[in-house]
Amino acid sequence: MKKLGIMIPSILGTLLIGIIFVNWLGGEVFSPGQDENPPLISKDNIQLHLVKENLFLENLDPVSEGQQFVLQVKTNKPAYLYVMEVGPAKRIFAIFPNKRIKKSNPIDESTKYSFPSPKKAYEFGTKKGVQMFYIVASTKAVPALERLLSVIPRKGLRFGRDDKKALDQLTYYIPAGRKKQNLYFKKLVLVHKGKKGAKVKSKWIKRAKKEILEN
Image 1 (tube, one colour):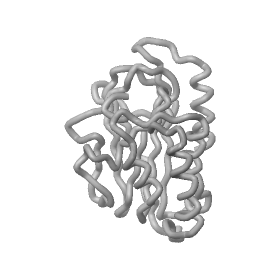
Image 2: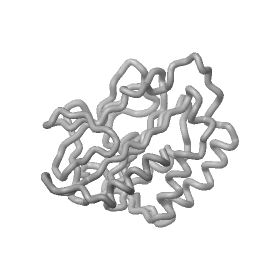
Image 3: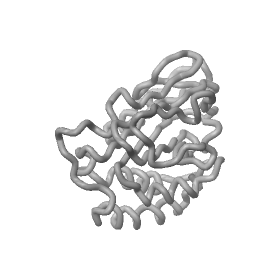
Image 4: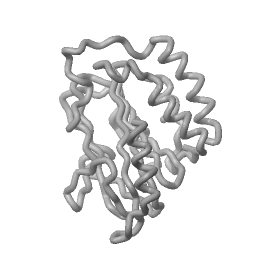
C-alpha cells in the first residue's frame, strides 16, 4: 500500500505492553458508558471506498495492486481516532493521526472524515496476502496509541510475529470496555490477491477468517 507506511523489532512490544496496563488497567482512559447512548461509531459509518470502481469493501473482499481507495469515518460524538494499516509486507503504517494530514485529534461528530483527504486516495501496493486496517476510537485520548503512531516513519515500521501479538493486545486489552459506549474497535480484514484478475489463495482466506474471529 503506497503513501502509508512499523520497524517494530521490539519497539512495538516494548512500547505497547508496558503502557497497556498503565492506561487501561489503571482506568485512566475509559469510563463506563450508558447503554441508552448511541455507539461511538455506527456500523455504516466506517467505509473503505474503492474510488474508480465506486465500491465499498467489507471483510474478506479481495483487492489488487494499483486499486485506489479512501477510508471514511464518522463518529456519533467527539472522539479520539486512531487508524493503522497492517499490510502483507509485515509493515504497519500510520493513517491517523499522521503528520502529513492536517486534521488532528480530537475529531468532531458532525463531519465525515476522509483519509488521506476528500481529493486524494491511497493505493494498494504489490505485496499479496492479508491486508488489515485497525480502527480505534475513544472519548478520551489513548497515550499508548498516540506514542505508537508518532514514531511510525512514512515507509512504515516493520514487525515480527511477537510484535503483531503486542499490537493485538493493545487493541484488544479491553474486553469489558469494548462493550461500552465510549470506545470502538474494528479490524477490517481484506485479501490482497496481487495483480488484477489473479486468483485468491485459500491460505490467505483462512488467515483472514482467523483475524476476523479474533476481532
